[in-house]
Image 1: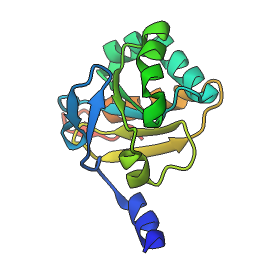
Image 2: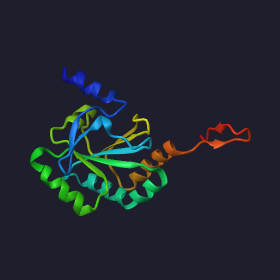
Image 3: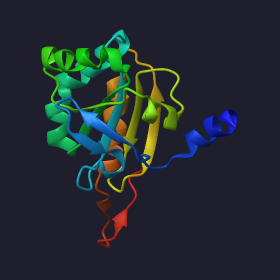
Image 4: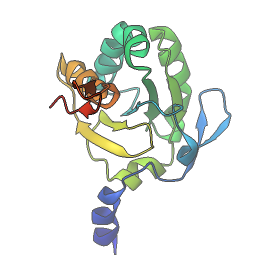
Length: 168
């Protein structure tokens, strides 16, 4: 039964429904997360995960530019266990992260996606469909992330006939 659940967990094409809290204690239904028709990055992290913090810091350095260029929004979901949840808000404040940060102390979202390794990053298109998944982080990997977002926001160029032409 567990194996069936684990293999089933990877078939989500949209963010599954769970109720998490933000870092201020407000409840948020995950299946209502959206970015008004624009792409969204969902990044699973933990306060003790050094690569996670490096990734979120690297994105923070360029996040304003990314938002201006593509309208992308990043939602960071902490998978810290309940006894460590009190470390998340100070971590976010200390780093000055401007992300929406949610808490998954029971691991509901982590289990739903079958996440084994963090950071675990998803890109969700403007229609709410998960179009990209990646786990782990190496310096510079955020460039691949923004390239995927740019592909989603690229406007097709118009040919001489005025019809949309694929740019691929």
